[in-house]
Image (cartoon, rainbow, N blue to C red):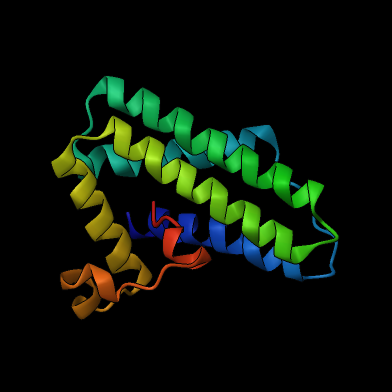
Amino acid sequence: MKRIIVAVLFAFAGSLANAQTPAVQKAPTEQALEQRATDITASMAKHLRLTPEQTVKIKAINLNGMKQVEEAKVKYKDDPRMVVKQIDIISQTRLSQIKDVLTPMQFQQYQDRREEKMGVPKEAKSNPSARQQGPMSQQSSY
């Protein structure tokens, strides 16, 4: 389970790192993106006790977000700042879509787990106004 969460962190963090590295890397295949989306969704389904309908919707959201990130990396390969900006927008949109699918309790569990994996201090969790808002604050642990 931790491997899946770590893999997701690397997927989104890797997107940021790739935008800043001059080395040419091959974009993930459609099959690789599909597998990552499946793994992330399976973890979410297990930990959030998603219904079959929610699972289908969440997988589509996860896959769409990953595809958009890959497209942004290609489109803005010469402008790392734009890549980061686009990934932030994609992450915010993904979070909003996930919120629409989950129940309030599931979404709170999702947020708590996400913040825990991102290393958000407990003080910031108990005091939402103390949270920093920025590109990394919207990245998902799932």
